[in-house]
Length: 492
Picture (tube, rainbow, N blue to C red):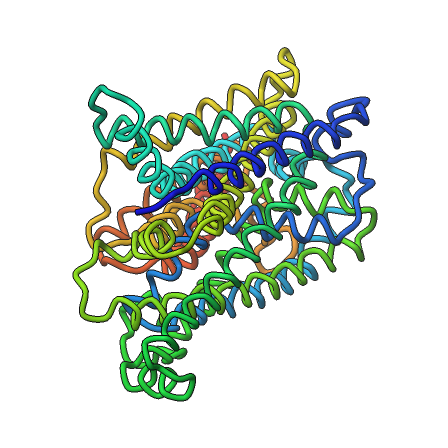
């Protein structure tokens, strides 16, 4: 492995750029919580679209999506197609509702339609999803940084350090830098730094793709030969029709992608916050739909990198699929490009973390009604909570499930009831849910993830099936509780 002085300079320049951007964009002081959390609704839809993409493009995408095609094929794109279609539905179904309300937090709608208990229940589910899911994403970002730090410490430090201690140190460094610029500048800072980070990691991915292609050409491959070999190895398979139990079986992948997007980009405050910050409803729709197109082509890019890695390392004994791209970056990429790609990895990690911190702080203040602490203090608190959650994967094993699937499966257990609650306000057939008393609605919302978890463990279903199961279960529980509520004996 090589990591030269030039690589360190590039990495340091990236950190300086991020902190400077956070300071520069924070010079305009926000007058109140609305300005701090939505940047006064003054931002263009273009950086907000970039911010949506950067927020969802965690290190799992940059490092671990290549592992899916390295060990498999392109069937993950079926899910990506569902993501695009889901955003179109979000733009037409939910965004008009949000702009008519003028809310700061999307969960305020739940409080008005169902009651404060239901609003807090949905908020707690959102927080649970963010804490656990983003903990996995932070852990993934620490893998290459930890490898780098371990080599550095062996060279310059006399005492012995374990891999566990180095990984914890990596997480501390990543979270400290992110918390610093998030607390400093609020949502305005988060969006502009996200936009810079988006450009950095996309350029990093493009370089990795072409550099891998160059190395393979030097080994005697040609473009047509690579395509032919990839086709023979079943690497170019996009549509999965034969394995119904697969998470990427095309019908369930598209449906799961659509419903998962309704749960993330439609009713998850971290993403909805970006469309609420747009100047108008039409700008919000542009930001949402364009982000889906960007993300789909990102998947194409990183899955293509995975196929090239398959041929580059063919015949070699490698670590698990989640670490193959990290290995290539740290061992094969020349200086100072290694430093640039490490900066791209940090960019993908920090953009997700900063967005999560900001949205967790907003929902604490607005939905839970905790106004005693300022936005900066809340951001610091949630940054520390996310740091602690990122330590959990260090002590867990994912078995056959890779980090990408683990990250997606966490949200698939919890988003179902949240989607169901919001659909009840847009689809007349499900409007009966709004007749539930606040306590009964909260009960339906809170117990659905438990049933979804039991169903997933019992059947072994992939995450693409868990979301529709959760939505249907919440509607069924709501209907059953409504019958109990309307019984004469209960009303007495």
